[in-house]
Structure formats: structure tokens, C-alpha cells
Length: 385
Image 1 (cartoon, rainbow, N blue to C red):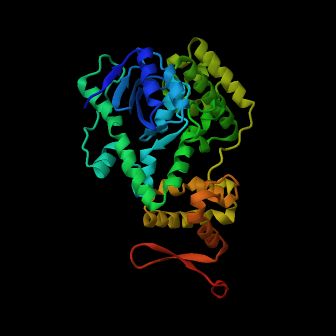
Image 2: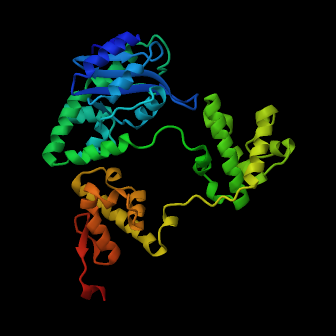
Image 3: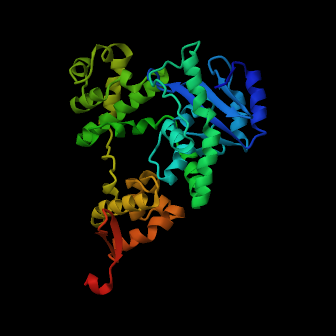
């Protein structure tokens, strides 16, 4: 497999000029975020204009990529969500047009396939699996690392052709375009620090006063992690936030006795800021984070499980990844009547909207079809009495 290294901004500018004259290019990234808050971009792989290149972001400015991403040329990626996150941080832009082969494959019956499995199934191409613990920030990279990285984009154009042809034949091209645009426009990057507490595993077990402390301390942790670019768990573990929230310390000695807190959390500015966060939290009134069913009328809550079973059957029959068709949040949003629910319009509504309405209104029910599947059956007014 041939590839070329790009280590200067001028080289990247020239290659971008060539890509902008093409209808598409393939894109992938390698990055680390184990030791940092923000992802650290270690490599950018591009394929197009008859060439595969490896761009070294440690050696050259990536400004030319903003010009590429703003162009009308289609970017083809696989499992793009994390790539969009790292590009947002490292480049400050993402492609204006995007095609995700993993998302597209979901409309052909695959369930979040890896690139390796999809290449083997669709192109009969066998590529080596990479070492997920490889250090992409080390220089120079080994020949094996470079070959693996180039392989992540080298076959994407051919895979795009194959999948796009099958989707066109199935009449699902527009659905994939909509799903890829949903992915492209999904929020990425750091979370709102004031909402960080909602990610705590046992947050619903906290009492009202403790919830305020949990919100304030978790927000402090998130902001400090951003400031020093460190993983949040290294700043303060979740267990310590819960321990501080329950104990609500007012002194450093009380803070030191909170579960999960160690010496580094009680010294100097850290201890002072934690106690200040506790005091801010005690002045807050924080409701429990709403769960899916909390925001739904009580009489409709059982419908979610019933409809979920039917959605899974539709996904199986239509060979669509169940997660693409409708998530639990999608069902709750639709049953609430949210105008922006994904099930309220488009291809999802065509598949599911009428059936869900009939199930909820009692005009249809579910039964086994005798072949291991479920069947939606109409219920007459007489049968409903």
C-alpha cells in the first residue's frame, strides 16, 4: 500500500487544491484523549486525487483543511462521530458535506459494523486489525502503523461506491443523506459544565441539598479539567463528588473525611475551591435530572416498551439498524408530541408514524406471526368494546 507523508503547510495546501477539484475524498484521524481533557490529534489520513497521504499535525499547520472542509467536495468517513469531535477542536471546522459508511451500512442490515468487517463483507478485502493501544503521538511511526493508518482511507472510495449503489437500488439514498446530515450537525465537543453532574452514575439517589452540591462540584471539576487539559477523573473522581455531596463539608478536615477525597484535594487552592463550590451548591435548588419516562404522561409510559418491540421487528424486516430507525428517546419524544421529534417527519414517520398512532389509540395490537416474529394487526371498533 503506497502513501505519502505531508509535513509542511505548503504541501498540504497543494494537496487540498487537488482534492477540491475532485467529487470526493476519504478522511480519517488518529488521536488520543486518555491523558487530556481535549482530544489530541496525532494523524490525519486523506485519500483522493489518486493518492493516499498521511498528514502530520505535529509538524505542520492544518489551516488548509478549513478550506477543504468548506468546499463542496464530499468527505467520506467511517464511524465519523469521534473524528468530528477531534476536528472541531484541532481544526475549528468539519466537512460541509459528509458520508459515513457505517451509518449508510445500517440501511443495508448492518449493525454498527467495523470498517474491517464491512470491507471484508462488501469488497472481500481483508485488512489487518490495528493495535488499539498503539501510540500515535510517537515519532517516527513504524511502517506497520503507517500501513494501518493508510488502510483506513485507502478503500473508503470503493466502499462508498458499493454501498451507495446498493442503497440507490433499494431506494434509500435520501434516507442515508438525511442520517449523515443529522450526524454532521450533532453537537460535539465539551459538555456544558453546569450539566456535568447529570453524568454521575448514582446522581438520582442524592437528596435535594446534595444535588446542589453535586452540580457545583461537578461544574468546578469540569472547568478545572478544561483549564489544565486533564481528564476529569484525574481532577476528582466521581466517587469523591458523591462523597462530598453527601457529607457537605465546611472545613478542610471535613473535606478530607469525604469518601473518595485524598490529600491532593485538600491542599492549597484545590481545597479552597472545593469548599467554595460546596457553599455555592448548598444555596442551589436542583431538581432531579429528568428520565425518559419522567417527561411522559403516566398512561403512555407502558406504550414505550410495546412500541419498542414493534420497532425492533420493523428494523429486522426492513434490514435497517434498529438504532437508526428509532431510539427510546425518539419514541418518548414522539409520544410527547414534540414537533421536532425525528419520528414526526421524514422517512422514519413513513415507516413508523401511522403504526405507533394506531397502537397508542387502540386501533392496532401486536401478535406473534408464528414464525418467530411480531405482526401489527388492526383492531375493529367492535373488538375494542
